[in-house]
Image 1: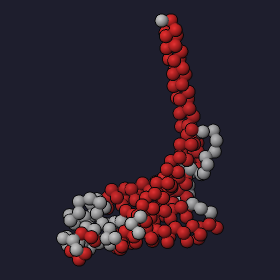
Image 2 (image 1 turned 120 degrees about the vertical axis):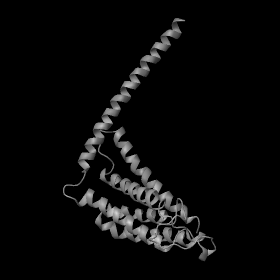
Image 3 (image 1 turned 60 degrees about the vertical axis):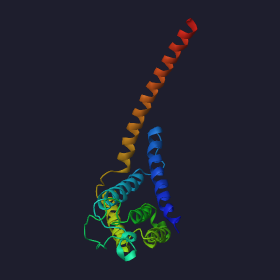
Image 4 (image 1 turned 60 degrees about the horizontal axis):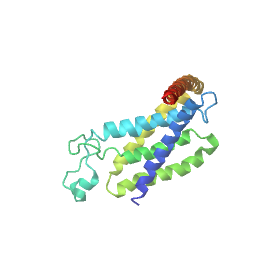
Length: 216
C-alpha cells in the first residue's frame, strides 16, 4: 500500500505537464486553434497552485504546528496530541494539518467539472474512490489524522468551486476562451518574430565566420 502514495503525485504531474504543454503548443503554433479551450488548463493549474500548492502546503501545513499521528504519545511518539483547530509549535514545517496528499487527491476531481455533463457521473465514479484510496492510505500509515484529511478535502473543494464560479458561472467570466486565445496568439506571434530575428542573426554570424575562415 505504500506504493499507492506515489500514484497521486504522478497523476498530478501528468495533468499539470499536459496543461503546460497546451499553452506551449499554442505559443509555438499561434495561428491554429488550441487543442482544448484554454480556460480548462487555466482552471486546472490555478486550482492546483492555489489549493494544494499555496493554501495547503505553504500556509496551513507550515504554520499550524499539529504533529503527525506517528509522533504523538498515543501512537508511540513523544509529543502530546493536539486538537485539529489548535495552532501549536510542536511541528515546524510539513505538519499534519492539513493533508497535502488528500488535497492533491480531491483536486483530481476538478477534471469532472470540465468533462461533458453526460460523462460527469462516470468521471466521479472513478475519481472519488481514487481520492478516498489515496487519502486514507496516508491515514493508515500514521501520516495524518482523519480530521486532517476531511478538512483538506473541504478547503480544497471550496477553492475549486470558487475558481470554477469565476471562470465558468460568473457573468461575464473573469476571462473567456476567446480572450485567452487572442492573448496567446499575440504572444506566440511575438515569440515567432523574436525567434526569426535570432535565426537571421545566427545565420549572418555563421556566414561572417565562414568568410573569415575561408580568407585565412
